[in-house]
Length: 295
Image (cartoon, rainbow, N blue to C red):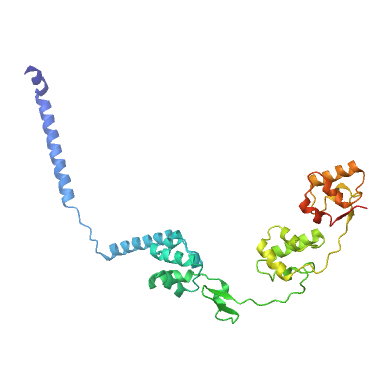
């Protein structure tokens, strides 16, 4: 007991101090209770409060509008799963469009788009202003040169007169009349023709870089070698290394072999002796000798 007594034994002045502390705590608690209980309630229905909330709501709408992805004009025939989801289309609506496109067909109006996808009128109204169809689709109703088939609408081909059917005299404009031959390919064909000094054989057209074999065949159905070009031939026994390299069918390695053979035999008596060179490309012989003679 003496141990605990030392903890609870206070003199008079200490007891007075503790008493005053307790009184102060009680008074402070009463003040806090009265202050909170008498707090004035805010009226949320006043015009000023309602205007404030309306302003906050408008700012929220502006923020949400800015977060929406911006839609640019697009061809609805090429909508992907991601693009369709952005536009608000369902998976079924997107799948219907993709299945339709796999058949090789195209939609060419917003009505056709709705017919294929079965989207709602409200969604069509929102996204159709951004539809961008090819220019010929837009003009097909105004131009009588346009017709349709079971897959889509295609413009009638207007026949363009060509200046010649001689492939060695055909212009770039003549060549562009062939389906698949555009500006770049027509120029490339003419440049290669110049390099060859003219086409001697029709199958040389297949050597043009980037020209699809099928397209080349279309060209040869219209254009052909009507007369052989006047090719300046060089003497294989006197030609320089640099000049021989200008032959469109001779590369550096073959040029080197020809010179080594020429040094070995002193002089070629006949151009056919080129076939005796080890590693000579026999499949190119008839083209290489278009530019060489042995005199």
